[in-house]
Image (cartoon, rainbow, N blue to C red; front, top):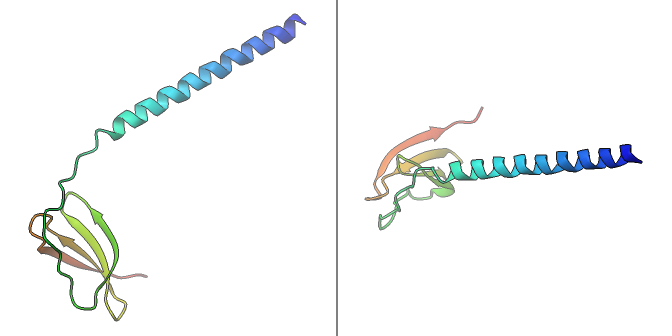
Length: 97
């Protein structure tokens, strides 16, 4: 009977210790997420795309607003726009192999 009590007590201590470790790891991970750099808001009045271009995906990074577009022929292009003026900075064709 005393062995069972010892085993249950040991299991309880291990379970509580595991929960403390998991909670500590979550707090550390969530604290590091808040250190991510803040992106500037988009202040451009609009972004101009070529005629017939369809937006596939949009994202924002340090360089500006990134947009993947698909034209009528199905070709995809990664376009980077300046968030302040809305001017296109670069256009990179995307090829799939």
